[in-house]
Amino acid sequence: MCGGVRYQVDGKEISVYFPQPGAVLPVRNHDGSAALVIWGRRKEEEGHLPKTGWARLDSIKSGKWNQYQPRPVLIVVDGFMEKDINGKSHWYMVTKGQYIQGLLAREGEERRVYVVTIPPAEPLDMAVHDRWPRLVTAL
Image (cartoon, rainbow, N blue to C red; front, side, top):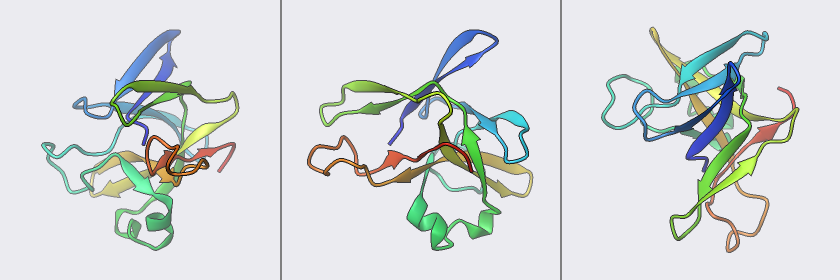
């Protein structure tokens, strides 16, 4: 489900994990602008946006996120981390020219980015999770 990511800032590799308070993701907006945006909302954090770091593609399409003025964004990372059923972390590289699709949500002045997820391509009995980050080449 993408519990962590790695990306570069000024030539330095940064590793970020969703449980970290204030975790941010590098986002490229549809207009080409870039920013670091808070990754979702943790249970203990104040705010009005959903308490999660992920948004299922089917729930986006069904309108469940519409109240948050959702906008598609590209999350620019070198790789992402998933844990297996035994809790062991595995890193997956993102191919150059690919991005994790994100959903930028807003509520008043609050804005956060959520990782868009889809069912895994491999059979569920082989998959680590029932949700996988959606990789895209462009929006």
